[in-house]
Image (cartoon, rainbow, N blue to C red; front, top):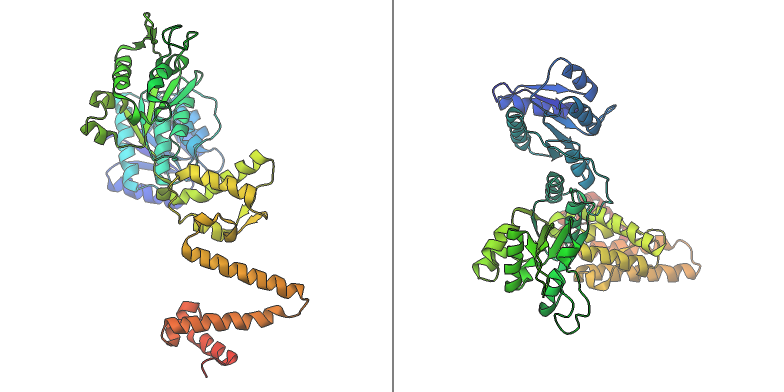
Amino acid sequence: MNDANVWIVDDDQAMRWVLERAFEKAGIPVTAFESAAAALHTLEHHVPTAILTDVRMPGMDGFEFLERIKAEHPMLPIIIMTAHSDLQSAVGAYEKGAFDYLPKPFDVDEAIELARRACLAAGSGSAPTHSAAVEPPVRIIGKSPAMQEVFRAIGRLSNSSMTVLINGASGTGKELVAQELHEHSPRSIGPFIALNMAAIPRDLLEAELFGHEKGVFTGALAMRKGRFEQAHKGTLFLDEIGDMPADLQTRLLRILSDGHFYRIGGHDPIQADVRIIAATHQDLEGRVRKGEFREDLFHRLNVIRISIPPLHERSEDIPVLLQHFMQSSATELGTEPKQLTDDVVEYLCTLQWPGNVRQLENVCRWLTVMAAGNEIHMQDLPVDMLKDEISDVVNWQSLLRDWADKEFSKGGDAIWNRALPQIETIMIEAAMRKTGGRRQKAAKLLGWGRNTLTRKIQELGLFD
């Protein structure tokens, strides 16, 4: 590490300054460049130990810069930094040969630690190898730190067929993560087969998993391949693995150990060339302690663990998810996407969403079908989604809307001039009641200055 020299490539002067100071304080020699072109020019005469580069820069972007360097210096570790982080960017960085992926904003100490690891990797002569892949459709959306960790995990595993255990509540998107792991793996040309342990009757589960021979039991009129056999050279996704019966846990463990299995009633071993991705919403460690899940199987499955947070813990992702699902719902129904007003989006971000992303998607479908106009307001939301206090507001708004419609239908003039004094009177009286007549505090509640409140009271003839 004493001879390590780290380069920083970023067109943002403030970012360069912060990183330069931090690396110098950490005792790591650093050189900063404002463009990829400038760094490439210097690279002709000097090769650093590691590079941190931004993605979006004028001229050559970070991904092109990465590819250019890897063509000449395949062992040089490069860390990609970006404020525009999504799954495809994360996976693309790893597939193009990046050492790691660092979504902004990041902790400076994290950048330093990552650079240290990159320098050590450079010293050991090891570097990640990645193969090019066709980009599949994006299934997972999120910019929250928790989802960035999920993206990074998928990217790091993009050249691997390791067993993965996914933890997450119902509706968080565990199967979507499993599909992305498959699509970005060397097995992507093979099948992706999913089986939910909790959805299959216990007495049918063994046949579903392993298949059966003809005539082995009543109704077995022909040989049938099980999910293991269907997933040959691909990925088998075992959802809700915590609900797997004990006897099947033993069989699964044996398959993971021996690499082959038998159909029910069969005598010839079948090679299990399958990657296992398991998922659960349960505390598997707790089930192990209670003797409800085999400890040896748990350790076989828990090679790499990915945890998906519930939606209420990543509320910053809700606006972009709403936009995505409103668009996809409209496309599904062949209509124009409806627009959510800002107050609706803000309110939806405050909800707990017990059904997580699946619930949010269903709400978007409901709104696309049931909301009358092209713009969705608070009163358009399903009644069961409205808190009591919000319901009161919606009722008040509905009453005001009905009153306005009736007044305009009468053909009267200057309706606003009649309505505004009444609204102001109601608001002022409520604020004064709340504060016990203290005008300074009442003005603050209303968002006015004290002089404005006094003038309004005089104009309306209140509290004489």
